[in-house]
Amino acid sequence: MRFDRKIYNRLLDWKQSRNGKTALLIEGARRVGKSFIVEEFAKREYKSHVTIDFSSPQPLTLAAILHEPHDLDGLFNRISLEYQTRLIPGQSLIVFDEVQLCPQARQMIKHLVADGRYYYIETGSLITLKTQMEDILIPSEEERVDMYPMDFEEFCWAMGDMVTVDFARRCFEERKPLGPLNDTIMKRYREYLCVGGMPQAVAAYAASHDLSSADRAKRDILKLYRDDISKFAKGNAAKVRRIFDEIPGQLSKKEKKYSLSSLHKSARMREYEDAFAWLVDAKVVNPCYNATDPTVGISLSSDFTTQKLYMADTGLLMSHALGEEGITSGEIYKAIFTGDVYFNYGMVAENAVAQSLVASGRNLYFYSRRNPESHRCELGVDFLIRRDGKISPIEVKSGRYQRHASLDKFSAKFVDRLGERFILYTKDLMEKDGIIHLPLYMAMFL
Image 1 (tube, rainbow, N blue to C red):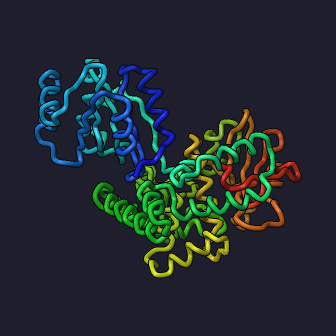
Image 2: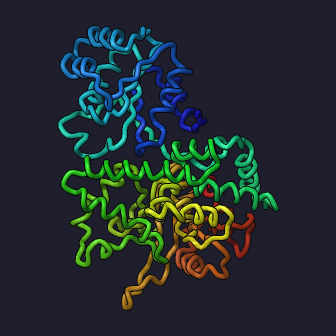
Image 3: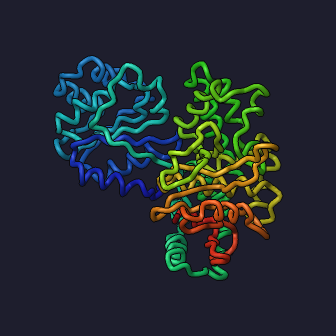
């Protein structure tokens, strides 16, 4: 099943603006759709292309790349013969798929780009792991772009809905309520939260409109992630797996900061730092750090030892949280889908907002202040973003709420630094008490 992805325009811009002067490296979590979109791009935009998949045995090509790096004529002849494809200077693309499995091939990009005959795209996961970069020189001729799970708009496209998000975007820009249509869009958004944005899960759901089919696809991906941890998290596999398995439990708490004591009562960050970094580098999670003194340079005051850990895909979080409860998961999905929720919808909503902000190119920050005597959180704001040279706080409300005390306290404390304030919730767009209230799906516009 073919899906339209926004990253396609980024690939097109690279081809037109760089004209072969750089290679493009597409990095993202496993099963996020990298290989598929590059294959589509290659078919549509080039006269011919070759995909060298380093996850499959290709001994002849691999040997040529590693052992004959300066005989480019011989290398291209071997590739052309092995793949039975004519390479046309200036009109052919060579794809290094799963390039993390052959770091030396990635190092070759410098010579290949300098040669100038063809275009090059690399795709990979786990690329930033130290083990994938040891003993190689990262080419400066390489541009990098991150690929994320499908966002809400891409999900709507996959469902054949090409107008909903455009309408919502106009309402956001004009600060105009949607009226009864908000309930209609929220129903589609809950559908998206249950399915998620991993292409395999979306394809399963699009074909059957069965949430259980999507859940099975997501569980296969979660199993793949656990297998990757065992295979690639050398020396840290047990710690990484423990952190990964604890994510739903951590996010289900009122204060969602990741508590090391859940891993071990005497755990210290220095002991787990590399394990957290592994999950971040693998693009499996989106970390959110505490900005202790937020300004427009939010990262300058960030406490990187105090963090929340969101799943990179909210649909995967749903299946991860349900564990092995395959028998009852259909009932829970139905409850969330209809809005009759007895599942922790707050965890899901906040994770979805984090996912939207990351896909928009933002790093994640929150604000939390503890009482020095009780050590309890006395003030917390879910997210902080920079807009128009000011700090905009964001609070996520999953259901009905009566007060926004923390947001008010934060606003009073940092009044001179604040821009627009936002509450993301399930109801219609409105402005009240100087706070802009937005439906959850509008997080993608911030």
